[in-house]
Structures are given as structure tokens and as C-alpha cells.
Length: 198
Image 1 (cartoon, helix red, strand yellow):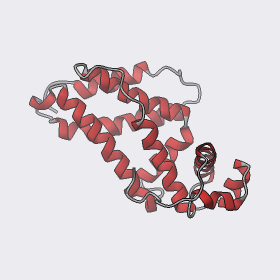
Image 2 (cartoon, helix red, strand yellow; image 1 turned 135 degrees about the horizontal axis):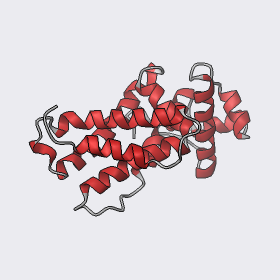
Image 3 (cartoon, helix red, strand yellow; image 1 turned 30 degrees about the horizontal axis):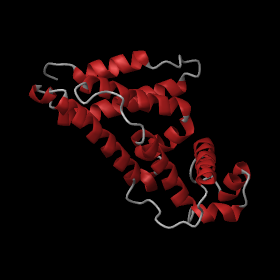
């Protein structure tokens, strides 16, 4: 996970930890990191304030936990595509990102605000997630044989990831969007695998 992730916690109930992370993501997305308070997060999660500190040392570690949850949700879903179908695996990777942004918009919003510097204290942690995403796309592009393209996969992978983030953000702005992600997946996949000089 992120380099700044907390390493010591006392709390051991995974369901309670998940509830705290979900509630914290909602609060951080609603009022921003600076205005969010442990008191409000505890109240909204239905726990005592001290319980939060059993799982997270402070508000900063709680926010880092939210960022870890983003990467964990993306990483734990194994690809159903065969290793010989890198385009299918790339589509599935794109799909997982769009589905996460739709299913957990607050979690996703915390990641993007940290990534783009709104929460500068956490930008390094968010960049770690972005680097992981870039490396995953890089690998899939290499397997797909895009190495001979003038726009090398190494240069293309960050653009693909940034495009996935933009597509997810646009979906979040349109509250009446179609829950299907096929159109965005097609556009992103075709752009990622396009041939020719750029």
C-alpha cells in the first residue's frame, strides 16, 4: 500500500474498520480533509471517538487508510481474462476503476483530491497509487505488443491512467449517467491500443 500507511493499530474488527473508512471517506469528500473531524466521523459511524483511535492513530492516518482502501479494492479483484488476452485484461482493469468510482464516489474523490494536490499532505501517497496503476497498464500494454509504436507504452501508460481518472470524474459529475461503462471502456481501450505516431 502507500509508503505512509499506519503500521500499528489495536482494533481488530474488519467490519468496524471498513465502516470507519467508509464514513471517513464520506466526511472527507463532503467537507474536505481540513474541516473533517474525528468527532463527526465517529458519530456518523455510530462508534465512540476512542474507537476510531483503536484503528487509526490520528486523522491523517485515517485519510491514508482511505487511500489504502482505494488501492486494495482495485488490486484484490483478480482478472478473469487469460494471460493471452491483454486487451481483455486492460478493458477489465479500466472497468474496475470506473465501477469503483461509481460504487464508492467518496472513496474515489478522496484519492483524486490527494492526487491533484487539494490535500497536498497526501499527494505522495496518492502518487504511489497512480504509479501502481501506471505500472499495471504498462505491463498490459507491453504484453499487447505495443512496444514498436512511436508513442512507447512507457509514455502512454500514464496518459491511459489519467484518462481513466478523467472518465471516472466525468461520470461522477453526471448524476443521471448510465450505470454501464461500456462506452468509456471502448474509448479508453481504443485510445490505449491505438497505433501510429503521437
